[in-house]
Structures are given as C-alpha cells and as structure tokens.
Length: 254
Image 1 (cartoon, rainbow, N blue to C red):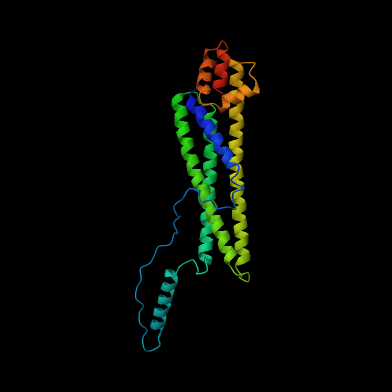
Image 2 (image 1 turned 60 degrees about the horizontal axis):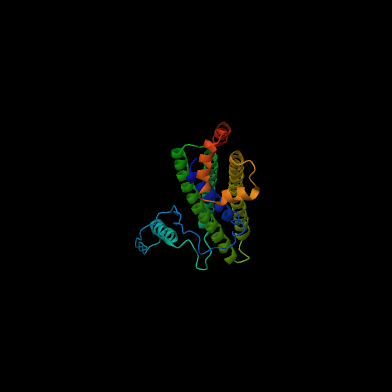
C-alpha cells in the first residue's frame, strides 16, 4: 500500500469537511468562488442589415419589409432588460442550462463513488496512482460545475427580485427557481453522503490494519495515525512484515 493512497484519502476527507458547509453557503455568493467560463447562449449573433425603406405606396411587400426589420431589431436587442430582469426567452434558457449542469454534476458524483470504491480496494501502486489522478480530476471538475450551477440559480433569484410584484410571469418564475434550487441542494446532499460513506469506510479499514500491527492501540493512537502524513506507508509495510501476514493481506485486499 502506498503513502500516496492514504494522502489522497486524507485530502478527500479535508475536502469533505469543506463540502459539508456547501448547503449553508448556498445563499451567499463568495468572491473566492472559482471563476467559471460563461455557458454558451445557443443563439447566434446576427449581422446588422440596413432596413429596407418602405415603398411610398402601401402594399404587401412594404408590410413584409417592415415586419422583417422589426423581427431583426428584436433579435438584436439585449435579452436582459435595462432594469436587470432577464427576458422570458432567456429565463427558460437559463432554466434548461441549470438542469443540464445539475445532470452533469450527478453523473460526476456517480463516477466519484465508483473511484472511491476502487481507492479502497487497490493495493497496486500504479493502479492507486492512476485512480488518485482520475479522482482528483473529476472532483475539481465537479467543484467547478457546482459553483457554476449555484451562481446561475442565484442570478435567476436576483432577476426575480427585480421584477415588479404585479408581473404576470413572476409566480411562474418563482416556482421554477424554487424547483431548481431544491434539486441542486438534493444533489449536493447526495455528494456529501457519498463522501461521508467513503470517510467511514476508510477509517474503518485503517483501524483494522492498525489493530493487526498493534492490537492494543488506543483510540488516540489510531487518530494520530489517521492525521499523520508519514505513518500510513510505514504502517502498510509493517502489516506485510508482521507474523499476521495472512490476515494483513486479507485486509489490504478488501
């Protein structure tokens, strides 16, 4: 068993302690949040074309030209209104983008759960290092997606707050926002549950290993091993060198 595997696990446990406060921090936008690139709008910018002058005589062609001009000007107008309230079209687009982000986060959470399982079973150094690299990469990506999703939901909330109370769209927008926020919080809680499960299994496994090498180890001694950077590698070597090597191999290969 390599020290890098235990170091990786302790790093993940440290991340868990920070992750457990994510839900409480939801309603605050932190300046320290990792910046993320804007999501694509999915709407191509159109070039400006001078409007066709209307014909002096009223006819269908002139009416069609004026309609085309009006449509073009609408498409070129900002989708965020001057008072900071996003348009209805943009609102629904933002809702769909938040749903897609949440789906990607859930997919990553399932992958993290799988990599956690691998981290608890690998005893080959090469496999352990590869798994640790993949886990670190997907965790960073998930953190980035979490921040992006949280910020988009917060932006929708702020836009709703700027709408006049008499607006006919406001109840619908509030309902949509509440559903998005609820789903996102459920996703974060799922992530935290997976991290807690991994933490418990990791600690239980290390405790069993310690008991093999030092059967009379006290809880304080076990805590020191869990909190130390050096002992895990030395500890794994001691396991394999002990006269309980058969039991040690069984624990290391769990």
